[in-house]
Amino acid sequence: MLELYQSEGCPHCAKVRDKLSALGVSSVIHNPRLPGGAGGDVTNEITHDELIAGGADQIPYLVDTDRGVTMYETDDIVDYLDEQYS
Image (spheres, rainbow, N blue to C red):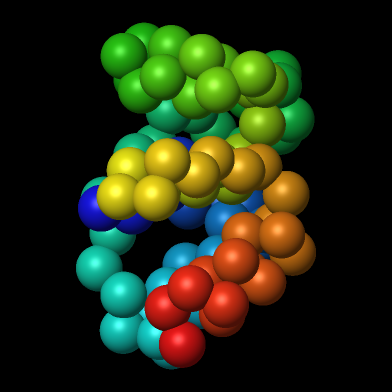
């Protein structure tokens, strides 16, 4: 299962969502905070705690539970999705 921690107003997150859609890959979307770097207002304490448990307060954050992979950087996420799900 793929889980994407993101924010609707974030252009980096939009790039990852667009890739998921283009590949036809299902995912669970979490919205832990508003965009604005680590200073964005937290909108969901539970998913925000899950986000920072990965090592940073940064979005987008992808978790591939089937492969045990987690990553934060937008271009790395897009490349990973292309490699694993194309």
